[in-house]
Image (cartoon, rainbow, N blue to C red):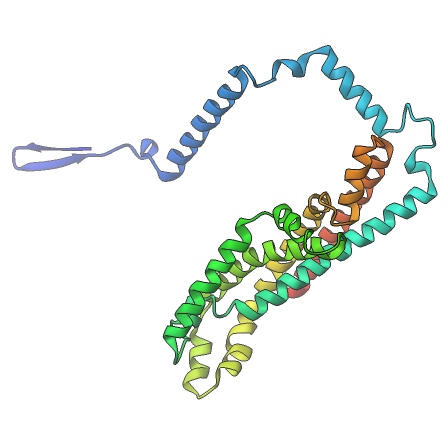
Amino acid sequence: MSTKNIGSTSYRRKWPLAFRPSIGLTSLAGFLLLAIVSWAHILLGEDSGITSLFTAQTWQRITEFVGELAGSGSTNKPAFLSWESWKHGAGLAVDTLAMSVLATAMAGLAVLVTFLPAASNVAYGDLAGAGGKTGRVAFHLLRAAFVFTRSIPELLWAMLIVFMLSPGILPGAIALAIHNYGILGKLSAEVVENMDTRPAQALRSAGAGKFQMLAYGILPQVLPQLLTYLLYRWEVIIRTTVVVGFVAAGGLGHEFRLRMSWFQYDEITLLLTFYLLLVLLVDLASAGLRRLAR
């Protein structure tokens, strides 16, 4: 862009409207460039293994594996044709669902107790009232706890907790709850920070206490969104229970690891069927509950 003087008149040459660069277009171009460079590095690298994907041996192994999942080559009746296997899988699915519900409930209760001091406007801002220094300390401690708990994946939490507790549903639920506490805590605190504070300030000006301000000025505004976040996390948790179950936390994940170790691929097909049904059930239930929360 340049400026020229013609006599006493100056004019500024501008980009044509259609060719003006924007943040969105620049970001898209940068993303596409990075994607091209990344794929080129993968495809052209010596250890990428991309050439083995197109060999006849690889596709023969894939065909054999899919056939084993369907029960071919097994001397016994396939698991998905056995009533006992279906009954056993249903029990594991119930255990997995119980683990997800317990984890969601524990994370939700912990967040309900701590999300208000973790909001800056409640801790030391417009709604703080007296004790601003104490509120600031509590704010930073809770925010640090949110960062710490969500930074460690659920699988690592489960590996640590299973050494202290016997294997089962409870260690998996605690591991999932700790990780999701950090995520839900951060989201809930930000909901409070972005809410309309005028109703709560009006209650405080009228002489209402902290509990009354919480019950009538804050919770009615933020509770629907908090429940929505909690239900969204439940959908994520039910998918993560299988991963946590790999470290002897029970449910479908633990059984899935055992069947993989014993090469019982027809059993794996049955477990995957229950897992997909469980995920679908939780998604439908969560969507219905979110509509009620709104």
